[in-house]
Length: 342
Image (tube, rainbow, N blue to C red; front, side, top):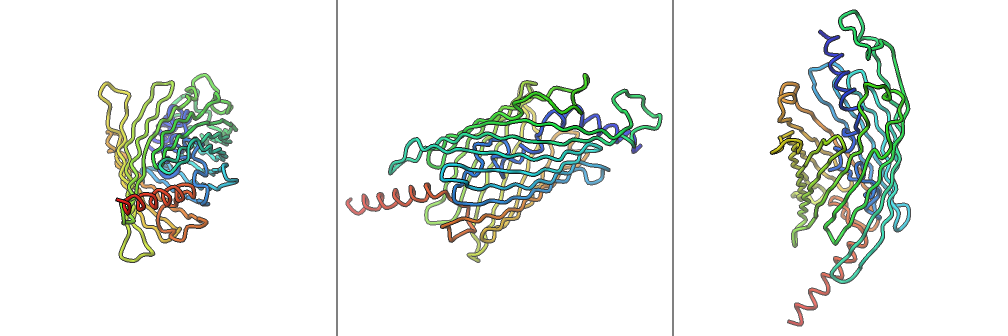
């Protein structure tokens, strides 16, 4: 029974996950630069470190498990950097990866009422993949794709993107997997092609007047040349507590496949977290709505991060870019002067 399960997992790996890196880009809601390099180091006044640990199918051997560590930092006044390290295991398949992203920010308009910027980003990723098939032989199934050996291969790829920001509103587009498949492990005839993904996202963040309550809705759409598409709706909320050193934050996400005439529900996710100054910890519960997800169980994702922001004494709230702080202060003072004159 275990061998049959291993073969099932291997088939799923070959036909689905090897063609894409969705287990990376799907974490965009916590780090947008994972799917759009134009967001790398978007906050030019903060150094950000994030760690991810995701576990699926707790009652299945060799179930999908992913660990990631990300770094974001400003290099110059208009240049940002984003890096991630990856360790992913899915059945008998394992991936170890590194990606480096750079972004350049251009200010298009800066006035008392409007701050408009355009960011461009490029990234390159390296990936070492391996498949251990030694436990898949034994005379049960004769499959030419199962060699019964340990195989590995090295590949590389590139991504690009841009983000237009107008005050607290943003509109972004990105392309991942620009290059064709070049990992020899997946260049056999029966392997699916490595499809290029197109990502579109838009959102806005705002703070309630006189209260440290932040609301950040985000809409995301993905499509590739294999006609696989998906749409997500996310809302993040940050709330203060009685103790001024702590902040509670939460996230609600709805995911839907758009490959059908009327679409199809994929799942929902909810995250509850707490922030202490620059330290943030959250736990995401992913509830699958497809029949396979319901039978195999849902997934958990642990998120931890730390931010070091210059000139921002209150680190328990989301870091705000220095240009945005100056814009808000100037606009606030101007509004007060107008009220006094009235």
